[in-house]
Length: 386
Image 1: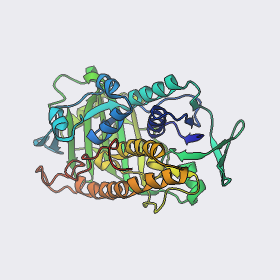
Image 2 (image 1 turned 90 degrees about the horizontal axis):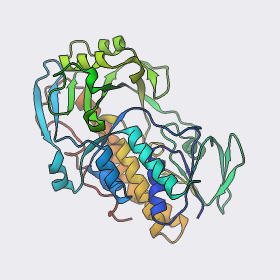
Image 3 (image 1 turned 180 degrees about the horizontal axis):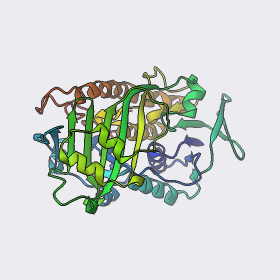
């Protein structure tokens, strides 16, 4: 079967890995000419780890990830530790898989390396999609440069502003949510001694703002993401440079750890982007073309579940192809297995934003909204019915 995956981000590469392990020979088409990922951290909760372990990444994740023993929530102004949440071995006992933090580029590199090791021709770079045409017997795919291809099925894994989604369902624009994100990566030796108080994973939340930080790369680097509310936005992109002064102004009056962390990041490691949202789609598939990850269900980051949903999609889609008698059957099984869950997580992520930024003193474990207490982590894409 000629399976074309559009987009070599994490979801596209997980899908390629999973399909290869089941005996398929997918091709991944990526518009950029050089593979790479943004320099940001990523949380892999147990549900994501189950999916990645099922495609053979367990040992690589042990080497690349950093599982915290605890997570915490602090008061935005005083820095007082309000909630401590168990992680570490308790996650394995409770969910059967670890909870870990990883550099996004490290995960991306491992996935790409595995795909290429299985099939050196599997990833085609410089392949910017321009048009799709379902012929009834397959899909003609055209690119900006070079010859087109004919595939039996096309999987759109090309993100929030998906060209595949636009080809299927029109050019509806994402909605600016009123939230912006700042991210930074700080070498740990750039921070004054004693800046980071345990636990290594911490969320500070306050009125209209939140600030999360955690260690990655064996504790050698601190990743942070600050989420703030702002009126209006005209710039697009994931890696718009931000200034230290701008971020400090957003977090004026916050506790010392937040301020010191922001001051310690270098200009080339500090970025901002706007958070856009879409309404859930009622269908993901037209003919032999379907969507996956952010192309199908973009998530706000307040539950830290966007990457996990995309990773789950990829494993479920591969399993559907392995189980089904036809392409139509596979795509139907995939949608039925994934639509209700991903729509639920999309909507819960919106609600979590309100709780995180309410400014109310909701500092008890029962009041603090997490993907864990919403039941999102209790899912294993490797063994749910497909």
